[in-house]
Length: 575
Image (cartoon, rainbow, N blue to C red; front, side):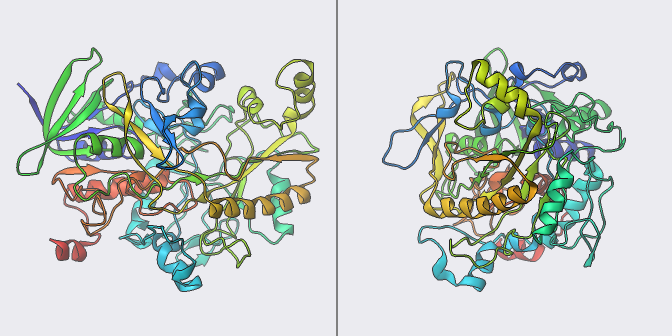
């Protein structure tokens, strides 16, 4: 007999972990289906293994089991992601979808926790107001968000205080705070914890940035800097992004799921459950899902509510393979980040193998609508972030300048002289959503269960190239002011087309003709079905998306439980 639940949550990462926990603690009977493991504490004790986690990608999807294909345009035949399809079928975890298993990407993320700015929610109208509509590319599908910063602000606060984020506030109720980000949108209260300890080279970056007229501030992070709600303070181990946290300092929704499953009788977690279809009644209401269990058996379960909370790409794939795309909008409006990596050698020891990559500072003077008028035609700005720690040796070798040998005496001598003096900067240029770039089902490549792979159609445009190069010039100025001896830069049109910040594939909006879900994530075409996470984003601002994904998850939970007042008037108008 098919088992029935109040809610099925597919994927227990940044969104799903929050929603499953909130619904279960409110009294709903919830089953969480996770493609990976339901982790145990002992899984995190011995994790300082770069071969296992970086080279062999132990906790991220493999291209041999979860293939994703890519092509630059619709005239080319797609190939399995070229940077992730070597003989082992693996790749750099930073350039393929995030971790599977309870907690999802929050088990292995770097922890950057940024709020979007007020203008980020109205990118299209802000650009038009400043530059006119004529500056937008002809094929862009750029729109404003259907909600505002102020709709989401209470949920940002909930993420920061309920889950625990460390930083220094810059704007509390309109009053600029010393040491924080003076350009952030107003918040009602600060952070519950101070920022991470500063890395060795951060002082030099801060001094250089200030000399150039910028306003650096510590990166806000989902990493405990003091003992907080059962989480231990960070030990600055240097194995953070791409790794589990062995002391539990890093914010992970795994902890929420684990606690809720132990403390209530309402949350059941089924690990190694590979959902392959969303089922519907003839009325159009969601019925449940079908999945393969760890032995390959087909299991069907039903529920009044089904929440797809996988990564943006997988959410789109599940909607498409289930035939849920009546208006043709699923998979459209793909937006990703181009990081513009910049690495240099400092005169001083920086010890980049110590501490979090977030133990440095950010400048926000050129972010969003703050971008100055420029000859390159850049319409939307970016922060410039620093990467001050968490540089393991093997990963570092893969990003060395071209003149350094990749083996032998020359490599050893270069590393001996320079590894301890490295310093990185990066920006996060946002590609504009376009009719040219989207995801759909690959007609040729299938996974081991016979399901079609997701196909990405994306390439970097001339606008992208100019935008990345604009920020490279700023990084060069900072590097010179910092006294760097040598530096090298990534291409402004890099090989990767997945950035772990991929968004927009099931866009939110009030109009069912032009969007896939409403602002709370409910699919217009299928009552009771929700598709949540970064795929909801109508546009991709230049900040890390995770805190916004979490804030939206809290908002969706309130909506399902009848507690939300966001957009009530607009929602009633559309019914």
